[in-house]
Amino acid sequence: MSEENIGSDANLASDTLNNEIFNKAFVAMNNDLVNRILNTPEESTKEREQLYYLYKGGQQFVQQFVAMINRFELDKKTEEV
Image 1 (cartoon, one colour):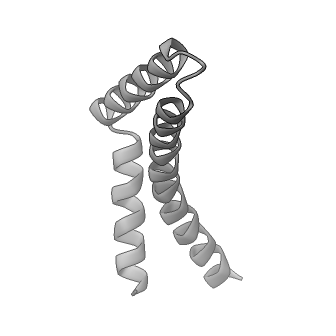
Image 2 (tube, helix red, strand yellow):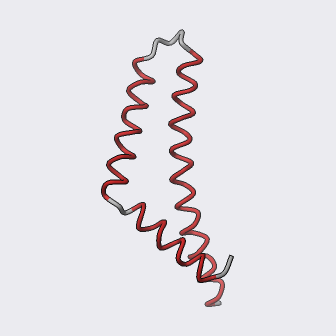
């Protein structure tokens, strides 16, 4: 991937993470999943695990945006040295 593409992807990732509606939707999704986990009976292990995996998947999704930004910043610093 070219430096220009990495920079463009990093900017888009940053824009997404700073997007108000994205953040509202993400927080609402997380809150819903946490509430569903908390309201699921303890003996419903399978359902609780599935909800937890959905929650973790959302966290990992956002971490991909952060990784794009960090990769670009690291590449930029490496070039400066």
